[in-house]
Length: 74
Image 1 (cartoon, rainbow, N blue to C red):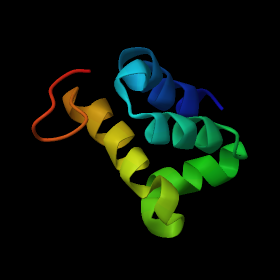
Image 2 (cartoon, rainbow, N blue to C red):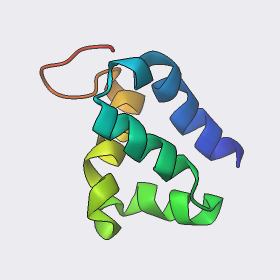
Image 3 (cartoon, rainbow, N blue to C red):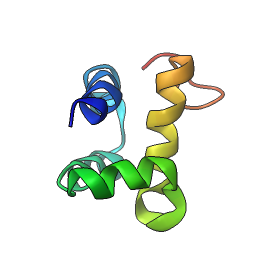
């Protein structure tokens, strides 16, 4: 789904290598999910607690270019 590519690709390209191994593994697992489930998770990230923080990081990166308050661009 193009919308998901536009959301996740910039994050992956800019931040993936800087993520902890735990977040890297979660990111790969997240992207293996069905597109419709993944889209739903972006709207309600608390559905699967394992992915909540990661999805919040992706969404924050999309709007601010940061992954957390204290961490500017990856």
